[in-house]
Length: 282
Ligand SMILES: NC(=O)C1=CN([C@@H]2O[C@H](COP(=O)(O)OP(=O)(O)OC[C@H]3O[C@@H](n4cnc5c(N)ncnc54)[C@H](OP(=O)(O)O)[C@@H]3O)[C@@H](O)[C@H]2O)C=CC1
Ligand SMILES: O=C(O)[C@@H]1CCC=N1
Image 1 (spheres, rainbow, N blue to C red):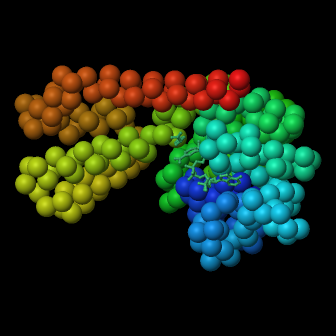
Image 2 (image 1 turned 180 degrees about the vertical axis):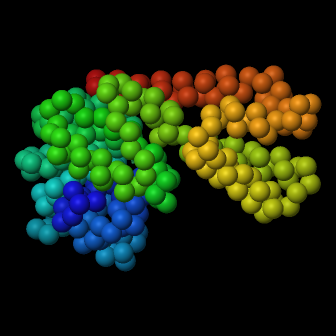
Image 3 (image 1 turned 30 degrees about the horizontal axis):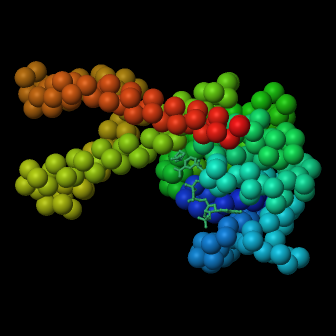
């Protein structure tokens, strides 16, 4: 965290993703007073203020409360608004950028398109995090083009690592795949857990009991996959007794082309990320 010590970090957009990343920063000892968040929602600003985080109303017009304050005072600016509104949002402060490192977490929005929105400003790193950042179990893909200094790359990596794992990609297009594999992926696992709870209830378990068992199993399986040093396929094999219960379940999944279903969903995610990229480049 030494790279972040004393650095002023501003978030433009204080919604789900910003709050997840801020949780990570606070958990790593970053002082709330070094964080500023611009968000139009009074409720979000009040919640952040109660944690001693500075807030700015991006619709404000006074000397101390306007969209440029958060950008002007920052060493690092994290852009955490929806990609579709980025153009309008950054227009309010693009002209105050001179030295700041800009980190965009917006899905699909390319460095080139964002740079155009920022009037040609180049000092941009793209990140694709995910919401488990909230509990420092996030996974973030990062991309920086050749013009970004090693110091700024390190700064971006340190900031995102406060929330979990970070992994650089060489090609910007690979961030579409990162979005499919990790950015959007917590939702797939939540959907799986939801579905397992429903099935468990139908099979006669109490809802709370089914939820506790399914969630603990997801946690245990993920932790084993990370720590055991064994491939997921091998771990699966060890659960699967010949002609036993697991084999029956896995064969059912295979008959329904589980792997194909996951691949198709991830392709839909990838394609939507590409589409957003194109829509915002037009
Ligand atoms: N959620 C996720 O799992 C992930 C999200 N992302 C990316 O993170 C970004 C944010 O997503 P998410 O946090 O889910 O979205 P949210 O809608 O939760 O947060 C965006 C926030 O930005 C606010 N906002 C709107 N206009 C402005 C403005 N002019 N200045 C400052 N803030 C403004 C919105 O306010 P209001 O609602 O009032 O308009 C909202 O509170 C997106 O680009 C998304 O692609 C990336 C990885 C994972
Ligand atoms: O659904 C979305 O577009 C964002 C990006 C990745 C996760 N949530």
